[in-house]
Each structure stands twice: as structure tokens, then as C-alpha cells.
Picture 1: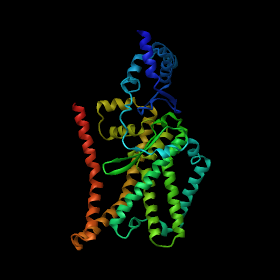
Picture 2: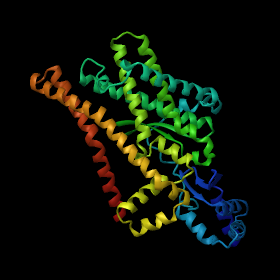
Picture 3: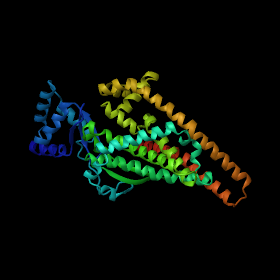
Picture 4: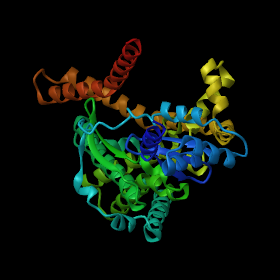
Length: 402
């Protein structure tokens, strides 16, 4: 009976990956996308299970590594509760993931992808950044303005132009993340999916936690790096192209890509690319959650489970969270500035155009239908996300009651 139990435990432990990220050991189930950070004795425990399948032997070795007795049974229970050793926590191969895999991009070899993110590649991205900054400093006429968003004959058409540009550059941004992951050998999937009425691109890079932290920086920066190249190329073309339709399009590209880059650096509370980069550089594991609990603890009162969660968080996460909250505040301020200087003027201008079209255009005219379609589209863009969030909240509550 004991031999059978040992074999079962060894089989379950064999599904785990064990990797050192420079500050802690990471245990993971890549097939489930579940990863946890543990001290060295925890890693010793799991590797011993994988080797022998004996909980007693694993406990003895982990105790030796810790310098004090450890509770092996309690550790196994914890890993099982997290889904790492749960025999029932197996991926369901019969259920296809949401969205459609873009298989042609997954045919790019790691060696080919690495050419984009080697010393030459990052030198190119740096030159593009410096060129874009130099142009913006020395050529005030090429600096973006919210008015550049109206790059088609009418505001209504421009709104749908934004949609097309957003889809195109969103795909490019996510594809570059995928390629950067591919370059360092991270198994990943690139998918086209949707959320409500929105087309979205999903890059699954959960297994990056098994890669040393120093090799992850490029993956997190990749999306902003290619955005910088787009901005530099658009600015360079604007210096050569005389005013006209193409120049208007390039101006809109510069505006929206710069806003996208600024937003990535400001949206730390939304766990943007810059958040992932900083959390990785600071060698934290759950900085977002620990920062939130730290701020809440200063302003309000934590619940019992939240107090226990904060107390059980890693020492480095708790230390970094004390000042990382200031970056959150700064990020919120920058997002507010972007809203006031770009988004709000656009919304007001679009509303004025729509009112004019409805007031002066005849029912059934081209202008009337254009304004009606734009109004419906903008209404869905603004109203659908909160409706979807409310629906998900209700579903969670219903599931909790079952």
C-alpha cells in the first residue's frame, strides 16, 4: 500500500517544474498556469518527491535544508490546495481554449525570434527611441495633438479608423511580446479572441516564471519597443511627406502610439507591461496585491483574512510596497492628465459633431446615419465593459451560492 502511495505521489510531483528566479524557488504546473514561490526547502521537498516519491525522505531532506524540522504533510496539503499536487487538477484536453490560434506565427523558430532581441535588436530600438525624442523636441509642428485624431474626412469615419488602427497595432504589440518570449525559449500561444464586441489578442506567457528573472526584462519591454519603432518611423515619414491625407494618417498614428506608450508606463494600478517589468526587476512575486493591501491598511481597516494575507506575504514584497504605492499615485495622475488632454477633448468634439449632424441633417441622410452608427458604437464601447463586469460579478456570486 505504501509503495502504491509513493508511486502516486511521485507521478503527481513529476508534473511540477522547479526553477530558481534569483530570490526564491518557483514551483509550477505550466499546463494549468499555476505557479507559487517557495523557499529552498520547499524546492528540495518537491525534487525529492520527483526522485523518490517518498514523503518521509522529502521531509527529511527539506528539514536538513531548512536547519529545523518541517511538516511535510502540511506542505503537501498546501501544494494540493494550490492545485499543484491535486490529482483532479488536470487540463481538459477536450475543451478548446477560447479564441483562434495564429499558427503561422508559432512556426517562427526561437533562433529567428532571437535576432529581434539580441544586442543589435535592442540597439535598434534604442536608436528609434532617441530619434523619436529628438524629433519631438526639435520639431514642435510634429508633436501630437488630440486634433490629429480626426485624420479622415469626418469625425465619424475617423472613429472607425481608430478601431482599425487599434486592431492592427494591438496585434503588433502582442505579437512582439510573443516573439520576445519565443526568443528566450518560453512556450507560448498567440490567439485572436474577443471580449464582448472587442477583438483582442492574447499572448500566453505564464511559463516565463520558470525563466531566470534577468532574462525576462526584454519580454516585458518588447511591446513598447515595437511601439517606439512605429512612432519613429511615422515621424520620419512626416518629415519627408508633404501635408495631405498620408500626413494626417501618420499624425494620428503618432498620437495614438505615444498615448499607448505613456499609458503603459502610467497604468501601474492596472498591471500594465511596465508593472510587470518593475515587479520583475524588484524581484517581487505579488507586488500588486501586497501594495493594494498596504495602502488599504493605511487608509481603512483590513479584514481578518486580508491581515493574515499581508502578514504572510514575502518580506521583499512588503518592503517594496511601502514606496511602490507612490508610483501608483503618480501613474493615476498621468492617466488623468492623458484623459483631460486627449480623451476628453475628443469626446467633447465628437459629441458636438453628433449633435450638429442630428440637428441639421435630414432623417435618412448619409450624415444622419453616420452619426447614428457612431453614437451606437461609442455607446457600446462605453457601456459594454461595465455590463460585462456586472454579469461576471453576478455569475461569481451565483457560483459561490451553489
